[in-house]
Every structure is written in structure tokens, then in C-alpha cells.
Image (cartoon, rainbow, N blue to C red; front, side, top):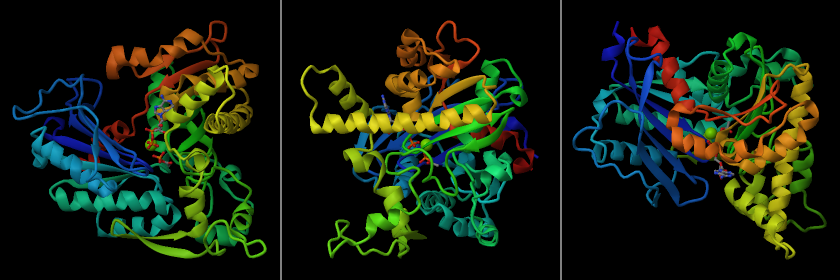
Length: 466
Ligand SMILES: Nc1ncnc2c1ncn2[C@@H]1O[C@H](COP(=O)(O)OP(=O)(O)O)[C@@H](O)[C@H]1O
Ligand SMILES: CC(=O)OP(=O)(O)O
Ligand SMILES: [Mg+2]
């Protein structure tokens, strides 16, 4: 069994829908800190769905370990033409780690992978031939996410053969959702045979937020009830009752619930048939009308089975379909320009206002419902994810919509969130933006960290180190 101090480095790899986030951690021994791991550096590759990809590589300001003497870090954003997908983004990162940061890959002992769909897995699994094969089968339930994660796992197995790879699942946190919430009202034989139920996603993020916020509130997790909004390119909401997931807006796959960058969110189940149906010979989709047509897509060497319907609802919808951009920041800017101008808004600005209002409306639909499901016993509404952490406007509009439930937002505190984080660095994990007088029901912003969550869990799981 290895002692914490000689455990070396952990690489945490987060294959999101539009991004690849990678963090390198050093395992700490118990005496050094309450935290089991310390961040050394992190990298973020974004715009994978709208090239050119953008790549950043940054040494942590709070790291106590000096970078190797050979290191030449440039933390500015690079537009990287050679990155075309998750797999090439990982290769680009490993090259930087070696050549610019001067780290020896051999010091990496564990690689933690975020795998979005874990089916019935409730715990992380070490990747071997058997578990890899099982994950490949699960890919049919989340072809657009798991396919990327599997290609990244394969690349690390080849590039870092001395390290063991462990899969962490988004779905595991939601295993507490009771049957009356997770069951779809369909033929139960088919549902059981095919595993058709609500699984829920973003679980690593919710686990991180639950622990961080309960510490902030000085409450045990088992007495903490929250409504958490994870708003990124993929967005979801979770009702957490006494430290356990009660309900969440995504379902069998990440396509349901809130709309996202390229995802439709909840639609009438039969909408897709009408979307593709030919009317009087005309066909505006330019495709055939078979929604179930399978394309056996080779995604970075991994075979995935995607139906035409899935492709449309996952990749050709969301704000990209409305606005032509997958960047919610751009939508907010155009919406602000429309609201502040004395001239009549352009067509683009009108659409930005519409996209923004749709997003807020769908968030409120879930917020209201979850507040009721939690019987009004909610310690805080928590904003997280790229949009939740950065958009003053989304937080303001959403909280205005739930003022009737006793929540309120302080304008000045809301505007200063980013400044507080920039000044305080990574030690600022939660900022309270609640209005005076609405103190019982807090509104918080939490910087979620799925990579940290995996590295922490990995360090604490003794069986992985035996
Ligand atoms: N200032 C901002 N206002 C609104 N949205 C923003 C802002 N900055 C970044 N975003 C959005 O955050 C999203 C990315 O969130 P993130 O959680 O990092 O994504 P992912 O789902 O890929 O993990 C993008 O849509 C981006 O445009
Ligand atoms: C589940 C999901 O949508 O993940 P992401 O937001 O990282 O794409
Ligand atoms: Mg994400």
C-alpha cells in the first residue's frame, strides 16, 4: 500500500460536450492540508463544436510546488488549428505538459476520467478490458458524450501506460432519485430490458457543489437542501433534499430538460416526426424523413450509433439553431445591446432577447417545480457552470422570477462576483449574492470543479492505491 506522500500526480480529464478540461493535481499527505489534493495546473480547450478550438494552459496561483526549472508557461489563450476533437486536444495538452511545463508523464500515477453516462454503475470503476467493453455498450445511451470520453480514455491508455485510468460517472450522484421520479410512464418490460429511465447528469459537479456549499453554510450535507443550477453548454438543474439528489432536469440522456448550446431541451415527443416529415413533396431539412435512421458514426475511432432524431435534438438545436452561436456570452451581449439602445433592435438582437428569455423561462419552470417538491425547505439556490458563474444578467433575471418564493438578489453583490473571484483566486469557492431581508433563502454562486471532485475521490479511495 502506498502512503499519500509517494502517490505522485493525478490527472483529471473532463470530456464535456464542447470542451476538454484537464487538471493536474499533487496528492497531499494528511498533515499538509485538509484538502487531499493540490491543483498544480489546469488546461481548458473550448469551442470544440465551433472550430478553431481555443486552448489555455495555466499554472495554479495557489500551488505550493514550483514548476520544474525547464518550464516556459504561456497562459494566454491560443487558437489551435491542430485541435479538431477531444482526442487531439488531449494530445496537445500532453505535449504542453512535457515541452512547456517540463513535467515528466511518468509521475502521473492515476488518470481520472469524467464519463457522462454510467448506466447502473454507482461507483467509479478502474478501466480494464472488461469495464471498457461495458462502457462501449453504454455509449448507445449517450453516444455524443461517451464516444468522446472513450476516445480520450483510449488515448491516455496508450500515452500513459504506467498510470491506471478510472472512470467517474455523472449519473452516480443521481442513484438516490426515487422510482416515482425516475420511471417513465411507458411499457415497463421494455423500460427495464433497455434501461429506459431518468439517469440524470452533471453529478460530479453536484457532488462538488453540495460539499462546498454545505461547508459554506456550516451544515452537514445530510441536512442541506439546495436547488442547484449547473448552467454551461449543457445545462441542468438538481433538487437536492437532505444531501441527496431528489430530481434533476436531464433524463435518459442529457438532451432533456433545459436547452443548451446545441441541444433542444424538453420538446413534445412527437415534434421530431413533424420536424422531418415531408409536406407536399417539400423537405426543408434536406434529409430523408426517417427519424430512426442509424448512422454508425466513427467518432475518433469509436463506433457510436446515432439516430437522425438524436443528431437533430443534440447537435442541431439549442441556441446554435436560433442564433448561429454556441457562445451564451455573445447572446447576453446582443440582448443587452437591444435593451439599452434607443433604436429599434436588429433581427439578431431580437433573437438574442428571445434566446435569453427562453432560457430563463425554462429555468423557472424547474425552479418552481423543485421548490414545491422540496416543500419550500430550500437552504439556497446555487448558480454554477460557465453561465451561472459569469452571467450577472442570467442570475438577476432568474432570481427576479422567484422573488415570490422568498428569494432576492443584491444588485451590487451580483455585479461584483467575478471581481471577488479574481481578487481572491481559487480560495473563493462560494459568493453570497442574497438580498438583505431575504437571508433565510440564500442565493449563492459556486465555482464548480468536476476535475477536483474526481481527484479528491480518487485520493480518498484506499482500494485504488493498494
Ligand atoms: N460572461 C458570460 N456570460 C454568459 N455566458 C458565458 C459568459 N462566459 C462564458 N459563458 C458561457 O459559458 C458556457 C460554457 O460553460 P462551461 O460550463 O464551461 O461549459 P461546458 O458545458 O463545455 O463544460 C459557454 O456557452 C459560454 O459562452
Ligand atoms: C451532461 C452534459 O451535458 O455535460 P456537459 O455540460 O459537460 O456537456
Ligand atoms: Mg461541463
